[in-house]
Length: 160
Image 1 (cartoon, one colour):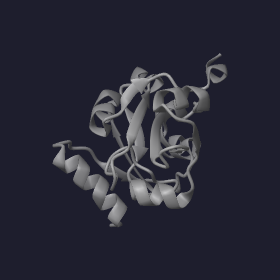
Image 2 (cartoon, one colour; image 1 turned 90 degrees about the horizontal axis):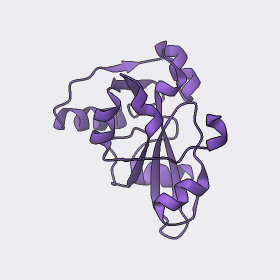
Image 3 (cartoon, helix red, strand yellow; image 1 turned 180 degrees about the vertical axis):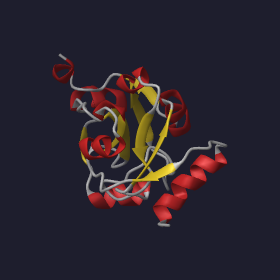
């Protein structure tokens, strides 16, 4: 078991949450994960990591698989301009590689927001630290466990 996967399992266990971590075919994208799990693409909780242009810190937006983060809305929430986070920043601050970033179990806590779109489902799925592992739970539980704040930050044109 990889260190990243162990860290997610430990975060779940320490929170007293009993969920199964499922191994899937390569699921680097929300569409891949949804196909592997037989669920809607919006039931996949993507972890989108951006970089604060002033702070240099990773900022996480947990969004429904079919949605896109609106950078202007996200920047308003973060209180600073946001840009693309590179692989090194993502790895150093979350402890995960791109494609396997989990909403929980980060090596360094970061600011997090949660897409309200995810709340319409009974169960959602998120990466469990690798591109091959996911875990599912109720969206309200994932929001609480991640420490993210519910907010609107997705591309409004995508919703129309």
